[in-house]
Image (cartoon, rainbow, N blue to C red; front, side):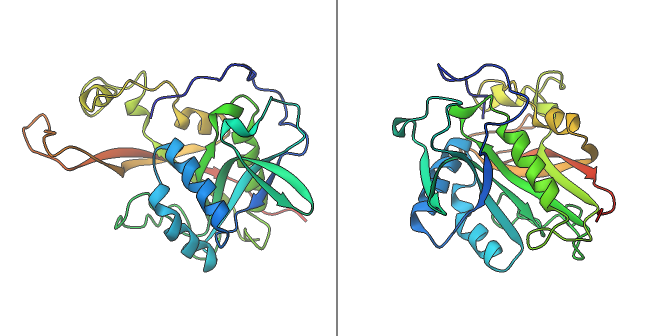
Length: 258
């Protein structure tokens, strides 16, 4: 779960704009190859690889619209080769690198099986939508692709078929800042990582969202990770699922302009 290093040859600073030809392309869950690429990307992300059938169902019934983040194969922004583990996609006679993915959702899609929906993340009338499952491959880190994906989803939020003319706000949720540098020490804060034998991460996504105009509206337990049966809390209780707090953020879009 720690931040990954920038690969050799990748730019170390973000350009003002992503490479020309960068675009979002809707994922086709009926295509086995695309499902396989998504599975591999979720393994790198470290969660969600088992949620693909659930996401497929949600997309089929119109509750989820999931997109590839793509670069044209002829881009010279970074030396991309098949050896880097990137999938490719041919659409409209053009070939794209599949360098990440993102989803714009009309209903909450929890990260864990059996977890209750959080009704604050979306509204049935489409006035609030949520962006989820944002991931960009480490090899293209520094190309502003995460910001591009967010920009595109925010624009689509008020446009059919994926968004709604009623949409006035976008929400996101991410791991609480309490687990990152500056958070409280101890097992319920930044010391959580040592307790599970992982290094402390550097990247706090909540701060990134705040720089994009999102504001925190609540914190509560949102995620669960599996643990060895021997793991114990400070009180001595044995756990098989470790709860993590999430930060919930919202950005007002305002009325749709014509």
